[in-house]
Amino acid sequence: MLEIKNKNLKDLSFIDLFAGIGGFHYALSSFGANCVYASEIDSKASETYLKNHSLKPFGDITKIKEENIPKHDILCGGFPCQAFSIFGKQKG
Image (cartoon, rainbow, N blue to C red; front, side):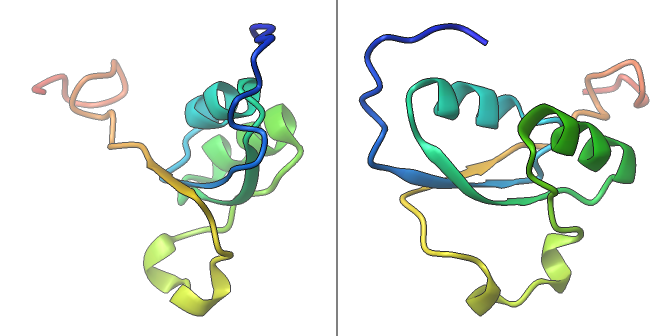
C-alpha cells in the first residue's frame, strides 16, 4: 500500500459494495477513511478481501436489508469487470 502522509479522510467512513478484492478499500484507507461495511457476492473474491483487509464482506447485496447497512459518508461500488477482464467474454 502507498504511504500517504496527508490522511485527509481520517474522519470519514465508507462502505464497499461489489467490492471484489478491495481496490476501493486500499485507496480510501490509504487516505485514512474507515471501512464499516463490505459486500461481495463472489466467494473467492470475498476470501481474498478478507485476507487483504481483515474484513469479511457480506454476500449478495440484494439480500441485505437497508437497515443492516451502517451509516457511512462514502459509498463505493465497483462495476462488473467480466466484459473487460480475461475472465469474461471480453466484449466490453
